[in-house]
Image 1 (cartoon, one colour):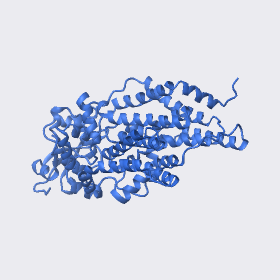
Image 2: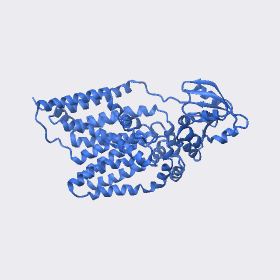
Image 3: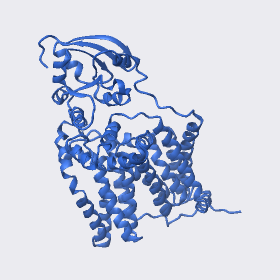
Image 4: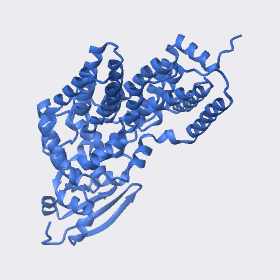
Length: 512
């Protein structure tokens, strides 16, 4: 009978049957993302992705970006356009680039950890992304899923190149991943940070620069140079962007990115792991495995990757002026590597610590998969059909104005085509800035209306043409306050969960 630790026996079995953890990860990826994508209506930002990606040509998309339609760089739009060329628009198809980015993150974390810490740690690490905000953004048609995948790919390529494994290929992959990160999202530049941190350590240790890695990074920056005009457009709106960077945000950013890692089952597992490792060290149970070492440059690189939300916040504070916690999603790969590597490194007496970590994560993810399988096939809710008051207004003569900037795009997109021309959004960047502190959304709507047939009108022109109209309020916005200040008569005529309908009459001779 073998007296080897249980963890070693399970590790050995998993290594002989690698298809088992791989199959578990594939099932988890498919079960926890595809049904969620199929049941989720497109929202404001995703509708911009759809409309912009379906412009007549790549050149038109570039000109629209220069006009300020979308302040993100174009890679995700190009990928979405390529998918649409094959499949058309759909709740899963349109989100395929984000889904692919998340799947790539899970795969790369598994491969990195398999080489360094064995299959148990690899499976645990590959499950960590399911406990982060990365899962939510894996089925959102915006750049964040791709951001996660490219950040993970850059770390992998750098580690492989630094280790001398297929060096030319991995240096090329490193340069491509870093360049694509910037072309995907401007905060994708954070993908450089783990490489830079690790290279500082390597340079000190080797007493010379790795010119191959330096060249890959330099070429990636050169490849991003054509983005300069688009960066200028985005920078022009930085001061009036809806989310300004504030130094009080670090804790919020980490809570957002690592949300489910802070839940009770994970906290209980962390406590058990600490006790296992602590008692093993105190009682000196088992022989210490001194081979459990991680190269210093990889430790620094992973730690830097974990710090990406903080680094992104600092960049927002010092450079761009803007920051949203999701800009730190490049940290998903870092956290997914750091957690199992830390447990593996500390568990030198080969107790069941790694099994507790992997088992807990597998139990929670498995329970979610089973719950998803047992639920009826999800049906996407219709944002318009669920609002009979709104629909009734659209069926009545005259225009209906949606006052909420974030709700308008979704309500317009899902409104039956025969009623879409009766819908309006009134844009006025000056009023938006004065009353909400940001004008980004109104400027974006006006730009979008120059490129796509979407019923957005300047506020002043509309109220001059329509002294009598209805307003549907379904969220925050500046319009009703402006109308009240202009002396308009505002009468609530109906309400429903999530919205109120008003009849508005402008006073004679009122100034817009």
